Length: 160
Image 1 (cartoon, helix red, strand yellow):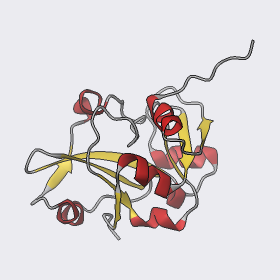
Image 2 (image 1 turned 135 degrees about the vertical axis):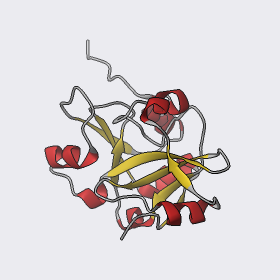
Image 3 (image 1 turned 180 degrees about the horizontal axis):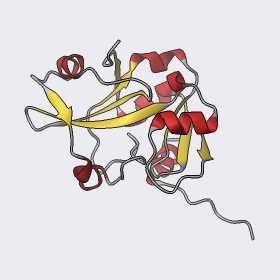
């Protein structure tokens, strides 16, 4: 009997929305940053995206999906979402807030659908690579499809 692939919540959401995607696994027992994962898999940094969870002055949470080798520009990001300021949430709060752990956080299937912004450079690619919802798992999909499923907007929110 064939071994059934263990689907993550993120994959089930894509399946439910009839979104085409590919998955890829890599060997990893604990958190390593996105740059190291891209290096491990021979992927370009521009096409590999990390998921950052922030909180605004109002207490509202925001998700930013940016290239692994870039830094979020907090001023630009805050302006984009209409906040006075935003900051990263504490690592210890990631699981409680999103249902995911550091290194396995993806914009798909968080406990709540937070306002999500994808760095506009994603639109130049047919496919981008994001976390699959657990460490060692990636999802490769069209950025427009990702935006549609998580109701995201595209914007310039990184340090140049």
